[in-house]
Length: 494
Image (cartoon, rainbow, N blue to C red):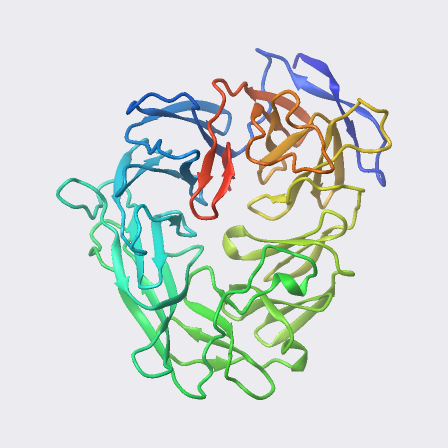
């Protein structure tokens, strides 16, 4: 395969295992290409035309395409746009009462009629964890708009997908990772009553257009009701701070929760979606101060206590020390069946039904510019750092760190933002327009106004591919679920 040496980009391999500097090769134009990064990415043209369709650009596992979308809301600095967690659909804010949704697999587009859950228009929206429905929630209503496959549909007379609603005094809600299930915690009908409700939304052709309530648990007085809110954080200053008060299994059939009113040896309970039979977990006192990281499946739960991970499997407990306090990043992976606790300054740990394993103990000095991006299988992760101080001035503007069980690789070169990491360890990332990606200790080099310049793929065999020149310049887009402004959204595909 013809290649050329990329002079402005060098690679420093894992210090503990391999040499210091090696050339990183760039695939030449027209040369045979490395295996594409298995990811989808979307961005929007900055070019505007009054009332004219907007162009969505798509990177899909090495292929590039465009989609024209009409009726995009252009009345704000950032266009609300969201790629679903599965990377299949992209939703764009339309007129006041509509959202446009495009299926990136079959090219089908649809219009979703908003549900007014807040009394304000337009409402913010999010995808369910499966990416098969849009969801809105507010103090008095929970609304879901199913995005069915071809042949199914729940539409009004104008052909718009209908948002199904449940009137409720909502405390919190959550969707399952691998099933069309929603749980909500609500104020009950009686004085001081609290209700835990499991519902199923339609996902297949032939199903009725309604939210089906399959279970409701009402808690009154001294019964073991769940604590009031989800406290889970994906960025935290200690391992225990990453945990929360409850977790939902991937199939949505069981909820594990910390009881606000329980007394005795354990405050942790579980309840199934049907039957309303809360069951106290048989845990020792060390779990009382623990927080829940994830419910991996029925009877398989990961907790964090002090500087330790605890894996509870049908009554059997595995403990693993994760080191002193440092900044951690929590990611659920493998369709919710595993969890990764990553640190840019120390070991990265993975927990699943088979146990707790250290992905790597390799370390590198890194002033991290972004949180770690984790592959869907949880076995690769990457992030961007400030340049290595040991390199001569002007040699590099930034670093990319990639970690796996094989060790740690650090690549020095221009500043990059990591977008996605696939299951083979290939990284999708972009550079910045000239003068916009250099490290500034007093500022954030990845703030939204830093315009991207070029889309790259760094492959598992350390070949760097130039994928797209990103012309015209992508427009600023806003994630309506997190209100995070960015230019490109991407999801790695399993």
